[in-house]
Image (tube, rainbow, N blue to C red; front, side):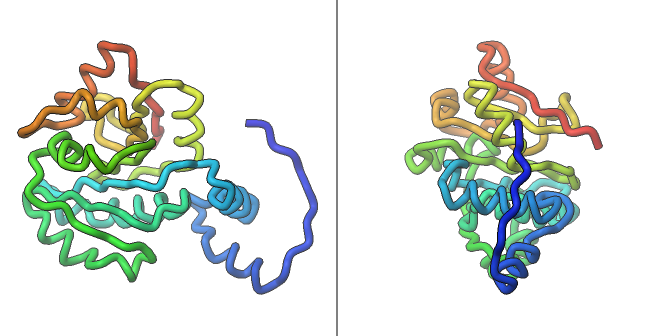
Length: 209
């Protein structure tokens, strides 16, 4: 994406608030912060829904990665997050709470059957592009770059992953993906993405870390 260098004047107290969201990872620097906030204000991202898959044998170990992903979601202007709880998900719920300490509002989805089953339960609420976080280890992802990549791909799903075999990572999905879901247990990475790959409807955003 081409960028142009500009000079602006801005109130010092406002600049301090802008600098406060720079974390060196999801928001790399002051320029990136201004770009992200401007995109959010103009509605360029057009993504407001996020679902975090939480649970499994590595539930306790994945808490750090989930918290890091929430910072990334905030960089897109997303502050209301649904956490879909799986096996041992109560440990994650106890740690994250209502999300206030992380600057977000968290609601919980319980009783879902796998990552695909969770989206099936939410299908009537997902009307536009949305994010799914399905991680169990820390991954360095520029969320805005991921969204831009997805838009240019013209696919209904983009998978950001550092392991193409497991397909665990962060996904940008379109509502059309929901037509591939059925009631009952299913996993996005094992049951849904192979179908999307077969139909040439998914792109992969590699993470090299």
